[in-house]
Length: 490
Image (cartoon, rainbow, N blue to C red):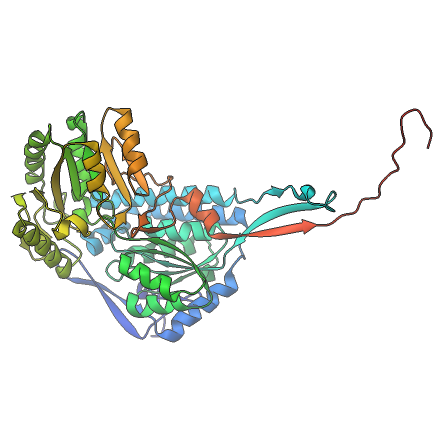
């Protein structure tokens, strides 16, 4: 077969073939800095070829077979668990516990999408209300939208990829996937599992590479009919500007608040806040970045939370007990350090953490965050949490809404009136009662408002959204029997 033979180690899948590209994308171990892979990057002709191949493949798999492929792929991912988890830890810097949790979520997403593939149906339309259509039959069909471009982030390289490609395939579409530059290896594993599960090979194309080149060409392509993107608000705006009439689902930035009301059960709430604020080193869209605390419990919360955070083991993600690993790269760590310095310079009190060593940031708690601080309005994407005191529900709502973002919020309270008031008045896509902003069961609709994006994830919502409604009208003039009055003969 010779030296030209390639396998999935190239990471570049175009028109059913793992192939060589025009450049290489190095992938680093995020803790050691060692290069662990070098995937091939497509040139412009290969991006175009991938879209053309996907276009020809749309709609070739019946719904029952789609469901079977997704279920077989989930079983294969489960069987390959040890390899996938180890690779995930290396490319993300997250802990094995985080990797295992995300893989389990991915298996659930595949199963839920398999179920939705079997539920795709239209509706009967009562056109008999229109004159001349007494005998007409009208109904709708759900048909694939076409080629779906999926562009995914580094911080959830298993579950977010699954939330995009599994609904697209369940709906009968073909997918062109561009994973995050920093963490493409998990996407390779997912795609290989789909192919091994007997997915027709041209229904999925995999294009590693920079967003500025590969991603930009992809979202500009006129044959891409649906774009699902998770990433920054700035890039989301760019996609909307250049993607023409393609439909878009955009999950963008956030600065998530969680409220501890005066009657909150702190024994229940504080461990959840710590988990939600610092898992994956705070690199989660819904991380608790701002903790709004009623003034009557603020001193207790501050003391207890600071002690809990100070005790978080951080460092090597592979070391037993580590809960917080490195940030995704040096620029992210430098930005996090700058956010802390900015907040302290504007009057915040740094209670613990915040120091930087390479790509590591010690988990930090700040208090007294002024509205002028960058941390109050920007997305940190780092293990930083700021406490703000509130004296009334109106003040809590005002502070919670005081950003351009609106993804999710959390509120801990025992008072149903407070919970419902918060739920109704917040400008966010989701409000989580008695859990944090980071609570995200995969079956639920998940998406933001304002600068946090548009559209929702969740298999039952994403699958139909990745279809188009086609109306079918059947005109039928049935022969009419003469009406014979009672008591007469014809």
